[in-house]
Image (tube, rainbow, N blue to C red):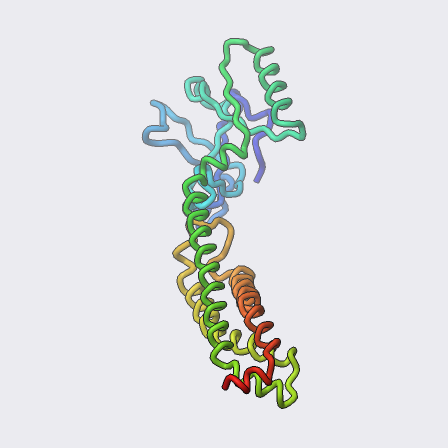
Length: 263
């Protein structure tokens, strides 16, 4: 279809545009262009005329980025009664800085009628207000996740350190029989990875299974987004390497003779 034009004024036949959701639900197997609609209920006047659909536009989430698209129709304000156009919201896109664009807009409105009140808000402020509650919850969850990651690193470090301490005689004998410090370090790190790997696999599976629970909190991210899941597994893997490196380095510095004498 088409959008509104300058000729769609108060003297022209009433026209309307509908969104994709309304076209899908009201005319599922028909062409919506040329169909007629009429406002009813609270939005209708005493004698609302029928309006012809001239175009279909994309769905817009007007309240929140996570809202479900709703049936929406659009009129040209020139074809509506004056009392329905007294309070109008305009969306303006500009390459100017926000303060400069706001000043120019106020000057333009004042030049037409100084009695018209005007309130301006940057779109960043509108979006921030729409997702403020979700941002708080996500940041809280991120803080809990950070604490959990820290506890995991400390736990892995403690377990690997205790394991190295218990295996000190083994490490000394390995060095005495010709093992290299690099080989011992890799042995400790490998054992740590094998210990953590089942937890990583189980955690990734649970993230995929329960990802739908956070769908309403994270906009634009699929619950089974493999980039996020693989990134989390890699992050935990790197945390395991970092936590096991210090015990592995200490194990590679074992004095074989001293360990054998103490044993």
